Structure formats: C-alpha cells, structure tokens
Image 1: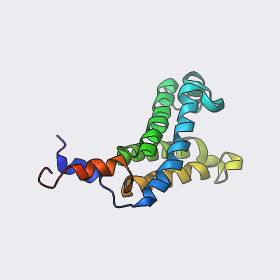
Image 2 (image 1 turned 30 degrees about the horizontal axis):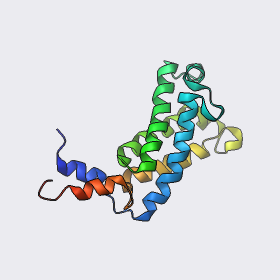
Image 3 (image 1 turned 180 degrees about the vertical axis):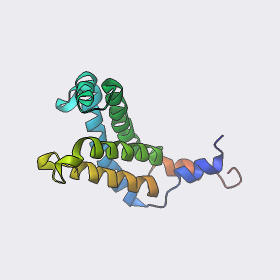
Length: 153
C-alpha cells in the first residue's frame, strides 16, 4: 500500500519555473506524436497503420504496441502539460523514447535527416530530467503535495 509520505515525495518538486518551461513543450510534442498513433491526427496512421508498421519492425503484437506507445505519448504528454503525476508520466515517456531509440533509430546514426535518434534522445533526456526533478513549483503536483501536511505523511 502506498502511504501519504510516498505520495508527497512523488508529487513535491523544488524545480521552480524550470519544470514548467520543460513540461509544456515536451508535453505538447508527446501529445502530438501520440495523437498520430492513436487517432490518425497530424498525418499519422492511427492504431491500425502504426500497429502494422510496428509488427514489420519486430514489435509484436503491433496493435498492442501502437496502443501502448501512443497512450504513453498522448496521455503522458497531457499529464506533463497539466503537471499532474509528472514523475510517473515522465518515467513512462522516457522508457517509450528509449524503446524508440533502440528499436527504430539506433542503426541510422545520430542525425534526424537519416531517421537517426537525435530527436528521440532529446525527448528521452527531457523526460528523464522531469522524472528526477518533478513538475516544478507551478503544477498540480506541487499543490497536491503541499496539501498533505507532515502530520498526515
């Protein structure tokens, strides 16, 4: 069972405005990419098309992998934008980016122009930073953490 002290430690962040400045653009980018996978937004292929592609590169079952990756990106990105459950959302997003790097981009080198891993690496680094630093002062997480008094924890 998770106690109030653990919840407070997960939500509290002393990252100041830096957390906000990192969360918003990274969250928007992740939401857009997840929207492509889940809903065919922004020229994406949706679950069926993304699932078929994932199967073709060895990530099977493709539909399930597309659903997991798309959900991690879209809902994780939404959580980052809002600053709610930031550390867990960022950790799941970081893992998703690591899988993208290793399964899709690593053999193409660094540069994005060759389908390399530089963009996924930047997203991995940003989400990993948010995993450790938290959402920052201007977040729902920090408000919730402050509402849990030390006597409750």
